[in-house]
Amino acid sequence: MRILIVEDETRIADFLQRGLRAEGHFCVVANDGETGLSLALEGDFDLILLDMMLPGIHGRDICQQLRMNKINTPLIILSAMDSLDDVIAGLRMGADDYMTKPFSFEELLARIETVMRRSTEIGSDEESLAVGRLAFDRESLRFSVDGKEVKMTAKELAIIELLMSNPGTLFSRERILSNVWGLNMDPLTNVVDVYIGKLRKKIDVKGEESMIETVRGLGYRLNVGA
Ligand code: CA
Image 1: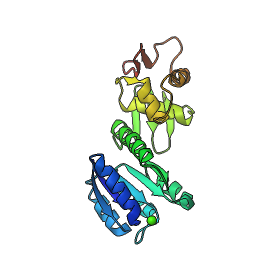
Image 2: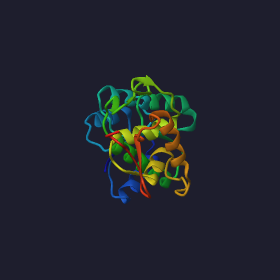
Image 3: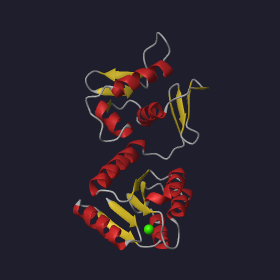
């Protein structure tokens, strides 16, 4: 992947660059906010690692500028412990994840993997998804069935969004687990099945075929014909 590292602390930038190059990635480092923003605006990267406290332009503003310019490159904030407000602002501006310094390189790789998988699966930057009787508005996080709003928990929404992003595609339990709960979940847990059960209660019509089809031994898919 082509990765842009926007980080003014040389020590951290070097550490990231060395590690990511060893993993086979191509890295470009920007040591200040202006350079970072102008490189990022070219839209030529697969991933951006963005520090918050930067000379020139603050990371939070870089994030906002990018999303305003429809640059939807996956972006992970690297922040110091004391800038939690900036992190929250960054996430609101459309960052995909954040890491608090110091962090281990292994943890960074795991986060990158999750963000990249999510970005290829969720992929589109469409603001709303509609499949059959289901509709989900990503801006307002409003989910509705047959036009009526249905309250969902965050995990329920994450699962149904994943299934709706690729209707008819089979999602294994492992894939749902790693997308929704992260990489460190025990693959033997039945939490996915429990949540699918909850979702069915909310979206299905009694007596009719479920919108979420169980593919025995393999996983689940959204039944587009239902
Ligand atoms: Ca900094």
